Image 1 (spheres, rainbow, N blue to C red):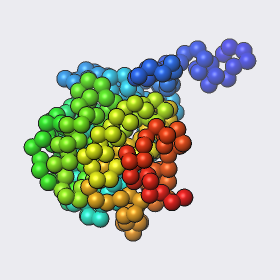
Image 2 (image 1 turned 90 degrees about the vertical axis):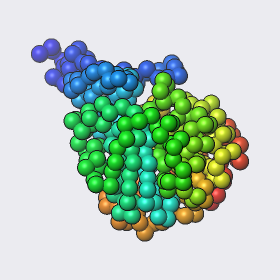
Image 3 (image 1 turned 45 degrees about the vertical axis):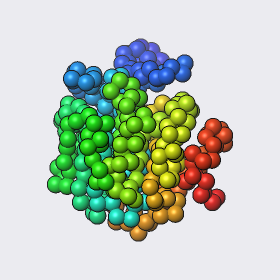
Length: 305
Ligand code: SPD
């Protein structure tokens, strides 16, 4: 062994293998993760898919070079994208997830006993299959009898639905390639129609540090469509800037007034979500309040702190 180095230090300095995510849009930084081995890597009909075993973050799912999740912190994303809307809606019986082929969102939805039907619309069958092969803690919910999977384009899928869903979750990749339409106004108009008269949508809406133009553009058109809109965020170290936000779009219910705390205690032990963070995650830093006019954030305006 080289003098002066422990075996661990040597591995980190000389034989290391790093996955590097290039951020889009470029922000002059990259994010690197120390990797032990590539478990699987291939090209599906839609994208390049890789599952890596990392040194410290468990397994990681990468789509087209972008980190979708790590076992280390995926709970902070999936619990927040699901339990905030599902505990706001008083009786979510039928839920649709667009994207989310890894199964993390489905795993959280099936914890809700009042949910009777869950539809997953994922364009790429290979994502579901790779998750079933290598990410059992994520894909466990697929075997729940309430879950039905559709391998279709999410934007086309919702066009044919009218007044069907209580809650729709957009668990998408970044707005690149086929996913661009999921960040556009026509898709939100179609989802509005696909919801029941008191329905809720929550969508992945990127980083308050790196995607301010996108967030402002989306909240502008969303607030013209939905009665109530707002933005909240979660802390996820493996996503760019360590935060990821969500757009909350609602026809009737307000997450700050209508949270059904009793149902939270029936979900079993969670790692990130609790009723306090449900509310405080809508507290936004001053620079975002300044970026977004108050009429785009009707929900956040109701915060009493
Ligand atoms: N920058 C990556 C954002 C990815 C968000 N979606 C992740 C899917 C996990 N179910």
